[in-house]
Image 1 (cartoon, rainbow, N blue to C red):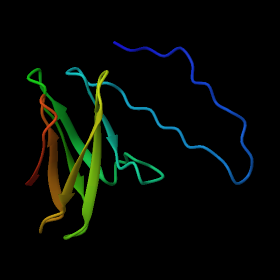
Image 2: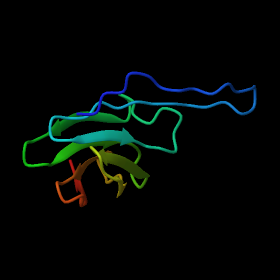
Image 3: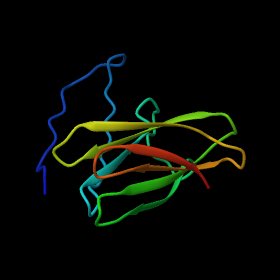
Image 4: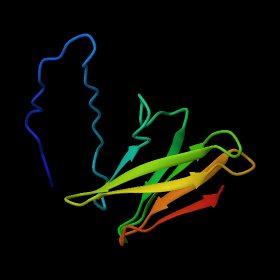
Length: 109
């Protein structure tokens, strides 16, 4: 497991600020990074029901307006970032999942 003891932050000014976010590593090695283009990548208003299993699958329910595109990033411990691109279906929720082989899926909830 990766444990950082510190994060090095550089000084910044009024117009060159930085935003940092951290995500816990789930029991199967995945971390939900959320919507990387948003100020708050993972919020309770957008995401719920985060689950994972020992087989390497992780999933989360994303809520939004019908037809809205949501891009959900996942990171595998010591691996690359994977992005699932899903369209919110009628009913306003989609199950976004990633599997052990880094494939993603979207399913209506």
